[in-house]
Image 1 (tube, rainbow, N blue to C red):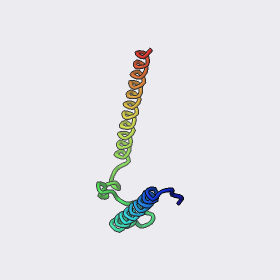
Image 2 (spheres, rainbow, N blue to C red):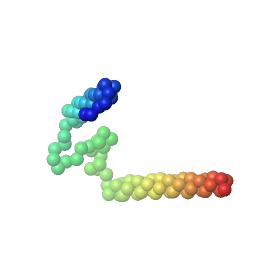
Image 3 (cartoon, rainbow, N blue to C red):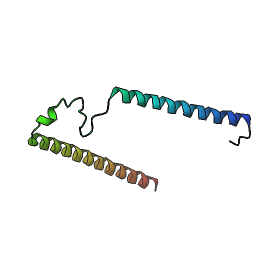
Image 4 (cartoon, rainbow, N blue to C red):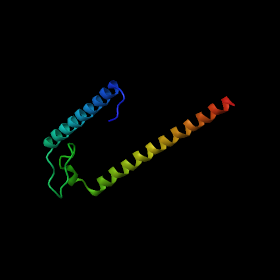
Length: 100
């Protein structure tokens, strides 16, 4: 490190210490989380908390309905975003006309 002043040297050192502490804390947190949730055996999927084994009992019709609901929700979201984008564009154009 090529520092020209004692102040810069201290600042650089503080940054390095902080980074080490952050990495250590993140690593410790990741290890704790890993210990809490054991890995699933290979070839199987982990069940989510709301699943409770009901996924196996769902019929194809129910799965299809769920996928349709997801599609509708996605389309609705895209439509809303498109509308907001259009309104934003119109507002911007109106603002530019005022400036002229």
